[in-house]
Amino acid sequence: MDNMFQNFFRMKGEIMSSTNLSDDSGWETVKKNKRKRNSNLPNKKRKADLQNVPTAEELNKLKEAEAKFQSNLFKMQVEELMKELKEKTPKMDKLTQWLQIFKDHLRNISEDSFESIEDYDFENGIEIPIIQNPKLTKGNFKFIPPTEIKEIGSFTLETMCSAVPVIDIAVEIPR
Image 1 (cartoon, rainbow, N blue to C red):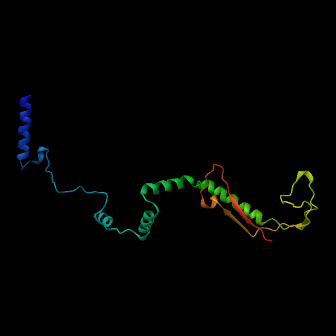
Image 2 (image 1 turned 120 degrees about the vertical axis):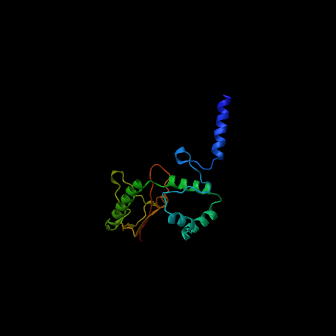
């Protein structure tokens, strides 16, 4: 065993002291001061990456993030929460299509003639959704199509939190 260690250290010393190694020995000289190059990128591309100046949009985002969020962790948490709250796109497309059909239907309802509120017949348990105080108020009722129909609430912000989608609609009816 001792002979084997002595031979090993002797060979190591010879190799270290030798500066003139032959090519067929299997050893290569190591050039210490060279860095490995990334062969995937051309020289111009590597230099351009180092010299790129951030765009105005990137600087604005950095300033905004610094002003609004005290830490990057908080910003990432807020972004993830917003991703969870936003409704999925296929569902939103179907809801938007339905909403457009509903708006068109409301706009296309024809104007009816005047009907007296007190003469309204309550057949088959139909109730008027208009509160009549006092009970025998005289008046006329006429349907007029809405002037404006808008979606409001969480649907417009795309932040519906319930499993069942809820769409709030504001309907403006003229006098």
